[in-house]
Image (tube, rainbow, N blue to C red; front, top):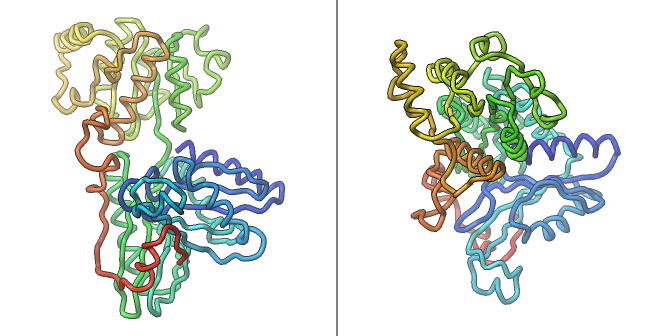
Amino acid sequence: MREFQDIIKAFKQIVDDGRCSALATVVKTKGSVYRRPGARMLLVEDGQTIGSISGGCLEGDVFERSQPLMFYSDQPVVVQYDTTSSEDLVWGLGLGCNGVVDVLIESLNDASARSQIEFIAECLHQSEPGAIATVFRVEGETRANIASRLLLKPDGTVVDGIEDRQLAHRVLEDAHRVLGEAQFSDGNATRSQVQSYRLSNGAAEVLIEVIQPLVPLLVFGAGHDAIPVVEFAKQLGWHVTVIDSRPGYTTRDRFGLADEIIRSEPENLQAHLTLNPRMVAVVMTHNYLRDRSLLRSLLPSPLRYVGILGPKSRTQRLLQELQADGFIPTAAQLHRLYSPIGLDIGADAPEAIALAIVAEIQAVIANRSGGALRERIGSIHSEELINCRALNLHQGSSQDAGKHQVSLF
């Protein structure tokens, strides 16, 4: 999310300055790679880059390939970086990553390329998801251009730039499905999907991505230890709201990065907030009675994560008192409660505790356990969750070209 925000902000400035620019997007990957499909990098004529498509190893070459698109041609290209061959270590880029990355590079002089940035900005601004489907490979007589797009909003509004009507119809069906799955998942991370289509007049490959709204984090408590939580969350591009009843704590001087600061007692939350399933909450008021009141309001809500600071025995006592008052949390509600809050990283200072908290929330959003990657079996990117349709596309010159370190399509 932070990457999208940085690209949108930089692009607005580039347009105002009248500078030339291009956009690089990872559209397909195979094997061990640093970034997944949907990763973007904005390239500016003066050499500035915003975002990334790898760990830094591909950016230089992609920038060089973007130069003709900035100044001479609006024709997009797809570049394939293949590091699976041992020859790559000898005469190629020397990455040794054992993966294949397809990167779409397009000029931002082109209206279709600009439309995706505007669409992403609209999704983030309106806090609603959307789907972007981008054609990145065509075969045969398919009447579709590389980098042609279909944009879909939750209300069914469609912006269709795919000329081939057979392809556009099938892409729209899949875009509706992917967007529906994202909404049904209560905002959990939804991976981009590479779809392959066999058509009557050829074939095509399309990247379908879901643009998720910013993660809304509610921080209850404006003490000193809440400040690094807000700072870490903003580094990830989340939308952060700080809630506390104390006038001396709920100030812009203390929380300059927060998107919103609300001064409220726990029992008056409904007057200020409408809780939804995309929200996550951290309770760190350091006040027992306030925490009990907050749990009474937050546990029955649709929040997907509620974390509370303090030892497990303290939280058990809070829950026992709530039960004595007649509120008995369900198993599903307790499943969303995280206490003690944070991952087990040995944190004891405010900054380390904040890191553990934000990391745990990120793990929950991504449906991960938060364990060490060296203990994980299989791909670290969980490729089993990506729905890639293997439809036996024609394996002609494009496959042969893929055997080399870099090939153009």
